[in-house]
Image 1 (tube, helix red, strand yellow):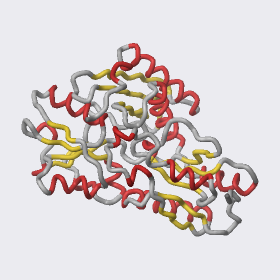
Image 2: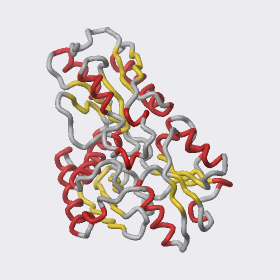
Image 3: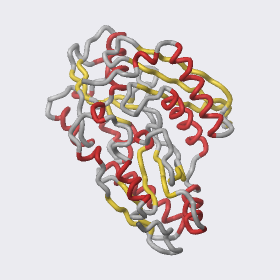
Image 4: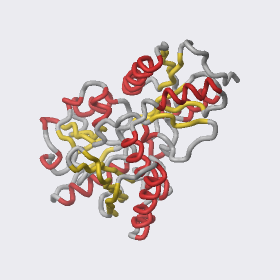
Length: 329
């Protein structure tokens, strides 16, 4: 095992998944780190269990399946830091690693990509809508019920091209994807509708990236962690901390039907409040527990954690616990 920190001026090794989206995300962070440190950054491609398994995420658990191999490589000293989609990270912090930076978040919302340029409420009865997420299934089915329609949510896996291909081929009428992913690979124009969080709340942490490195154990590793920390956006960190705290307090993994979004509300140019919304639902959309709370912008991640726990407690009191075992079939 070689856990020595990189020497000053040495090439930094950035661990990333191999997908087009992961490489695009990691490439953006690599450029930022090069600009900060003046050091070359090499992308090291790593295959995760989530990339090789053909099972649906709800069946393999979702939590950590895209990050454990990257974390193993970090702890073994094979890479110096890693970039993850924050929504894929388990809420428990691993020993020996630190979340050095959460850069400014991309659009956290979901988007619809539908045939013939259709919006969600224009889809016909019986429309087949693809998504691998029980969270999306629950809210899409509830929305369809609310407007007097019936849709079929179809569990799918695969990269963005694979998912969009289901619509192009006519196998599905629409798919739902994260706006951030399409934006980062330059294909957001293919979305036919950005879904209002009033109808579909995103996954906790959606649209945010996580830059992770080994916990400082000597001067050189402390220096790398400190330089990476310069990429951190404090508003994004408190928002996603509140969302992930809610998820953790519900004792739910990232494949559970839980949505959360913390909005920072401004008075003119000054951010004054944060609104946290959460939802838990049955995948058929027949039952949703959806609540929100608004208060001062948390002064620290600890305050954001407390806000998430408070809203989770209210949701549990309203019956959310009975919905946590829901999974896509």
